[in-house]
Amino acid sequence: MLEFLFTKTPLGFLTQSLWRDEAFSYLMAKESINNIFVLSAKDFTPPIHSLMLKFWIWIFGSGEIALRSMSLVFYFISAYFFYLILSEVLKIKGLWKHAYMLLFFLNPILHYFAFEARAYSLLVLLTLMSFYFLLKKRMKSYIAVSVVGLYTHYFMAFIILIQALYVFLIDKGRKKIFKYISVMVLFFLPWVAFVIKQNNIANEPFWINDISRESLKLIPSILYSGYESGFYYLNHVVSNLNLTIYLYVFSGLVLYYQGVLKNKKIFLLLLIWGFLPAFITLFLSNYKPIFLARYLIISTPALILLLILINEKLNKIFKYILFFILLIQTFNFSALQAEYRQKLDYKKTISEIRLQSNQKDFLYVISELDYHVAKYYFEEDRVYIYGKDYTDIPNFVGKALIPKNSIKQIIPLYPSKAFILYPDLTYDVKTVF
Image (cartoon, rainbow, N blue to C red):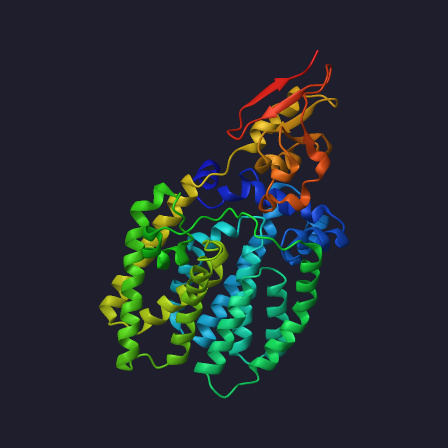
């Protein structure tokens, strides 16, 4: 039973080895509070998640499960605010309200990042809270949550832009939104100035590739599920999911123009919240590629809510049939992801190295991409990058936490040994006599 739970369900994500970004989160959180601000600025990353993770580690420790549990807590609080929006904004009642919650809990990208020690689960929570407080006109809470969101991930700026467009163009009469946004900007400007001060702003290479024409057709399912082109085991699922979402959106537009949708303002809000961030990132990607499913997780709750709103107004037969199809496709996607989306088993390999090493030995990684994970699983002061020039290491690999003295060009003299870790997690043992 336990083997099934940790190999065939999302619980497996909780116990797998950390990957590079999660190890980076841990190493950043280990720094002093002052260093977290400085190093986050150098990494072009807002500091809130690292600060929260630091306090979390003080209480719960730094094992894989402990590190990831903070995101899991954010996920369940997000579910609560999603439920509030269903109840108080969309006015969903009865058993359907609970059935629709399955779309949240089974959603592949939401529950994947619920088990990852990164900022995305927190970002989803702050996005939902921000919209909830805005729609309930609790403006002090709205401002506070939105500012925290900006200090969590820069894509929160898209959410604030959407909210401004909604209030100004759709929900006319509340033009004070610009006053509230001005307050947010004032709170965020010191961080922007600090980031600029800490960096030489240059056109450095970035790791995100241009989106393919094939992926452009799949944008609805990408936003809904977090699908990426490398997930070959999902290729036969994502196209069908995409068709279902297109059918829902087309039906919603028809119902909108027929006047069947009574709450047109919320429909338009969910439509722009669900799709405008993707269109903006696609436009900006003409200059620098930034379209990435995990960055656009801010749109996932909106897309789920949009499909629910449309489903509520469908003919009874279509309501049951389409919802059942969507639910099955979501479950199928999630089940395949849980089974096949495995992180590299750094823990196993580096544990083998630890058993063979002594205090005079070192761990050399060939790729800088393995540096942070190696430091998490090995003794930090004995991990180095081998055979690289420091200037050739790009910033996007977490260079802010790679000191210049972390580079080694020579193998140590016996009796010390160097365990050379390759990107495929094989390793050699070398020394000089």
